[in-house]
Image (tube, rainbow, N blue to C red; front, side):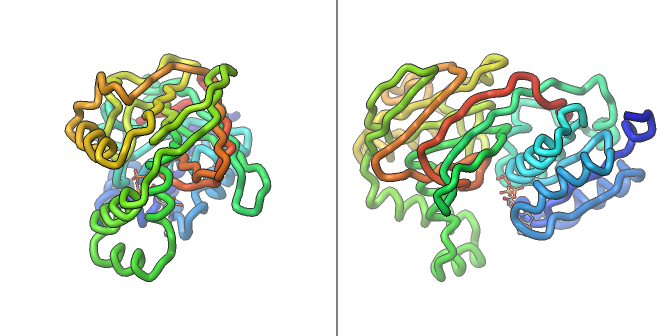
Length: 306
Ligand SMILES: Nc1ncnc2c1ncn2[C@@H]1O[C@H](COP(=O)(O)OP(=O)(O)OP(=O)(O)O)[C@@H](O)[C@H]1O
């Protein structure tokens, strides 16, 4: 790559990320990264196409501006185009921003060009079944879930009239309604689980496979640090009744989940999960498909800067 290509920067901005974000982030980019190109995503999934385009056009730094979903899409496009050597910057401007938690985002966006801030980052990879029955593949930077959290996520994304109205009225209200409707009918699920190839049959409430300690906007299962390099945290929440789930969610929301007897955390390299009735698979905040799903990790695959 020529020196001037290394210095070329493009920002991929999701205007729909976050809650009532206004245009402040775009204004910051114009003021603090005046030489950067600015591309705007126009539809869900567009970040993948733009991440790929940025690598093909020879940009040295691609800055994802939005939430974890936007970061994930841009990373997927870059990696699909063989852009492991291209730097991936991130400006957290979404709702949850779990990838950026625990890191100190730059005070001035020009800091994203400072190569001393670069970090080699593990990238998770997951395979799953697409709605058309074919197998799909995604890279992830935050994590994935199968079980209660992914079912709530699926209900939230359903394009029903009730959801449409609630989302227009108040986004957190729509999220709460999806959670309550799911919980009202929730039963623990039987899954076949393989952690590092070790098979077991489990009744679970939820399985999370995490690259960072946070999910759903700063919630944790009580683990203060990310999994070691080359590893993933597999967090299995055992099957508990509806009252148990509410109690557990309350502990998680209070940041007091550590040590709860239903939470089992194991650092692993691979996870496979399957169920008799396919369960939705959520990855970096998006429902991508359904089980069976296999998770693994590519160590130090991407250079990120936050
Ligand atoms: N122009 C657009 N209109 C509607 N949706 C879009 C557009 N561009 C991108 N998207 C989709 O918006 C989704 C959500 O974006 P993102 O995850 O960045 O924001 P968020 O949900 O607010 O943040 P977080 O994931 O941190 O909670 C992404 O899945 C992406 O596909």
